[in-house]
Image 1 (tube, helix red, strand yellow):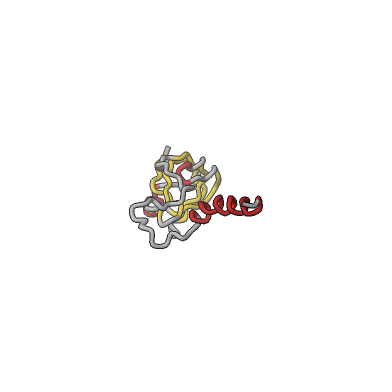
Image 2: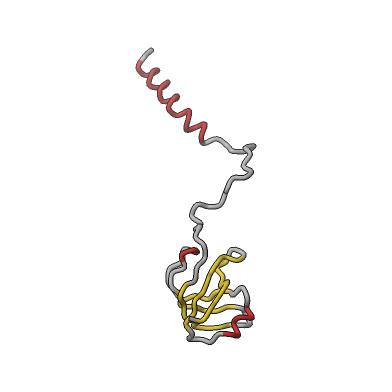
Length: 117
């Protein structure tokens, strides 16, 4: 074989597996496979120290200055959050130090539990 033909054949053979791997996955049975994004945290929710800055019982939200929320991948900041049990807001006052458990509810970071320190 001529050197050019040999090189072309070698390149074609080397590219074949990559072309096969890049093919469509249509028709493949994906039942039972965990298809969640890998960036999602698998950590269980745990209490985080926070200070209540504002309470909005009508909207069912509380603004908290909080420590990092590891299970949601959030750094320490001040932010308003919806509260799963909005009636619990009547038990708290602005300025109080609390221990808060956060989780995603309907895809949104939400206060699922809040206790006085």
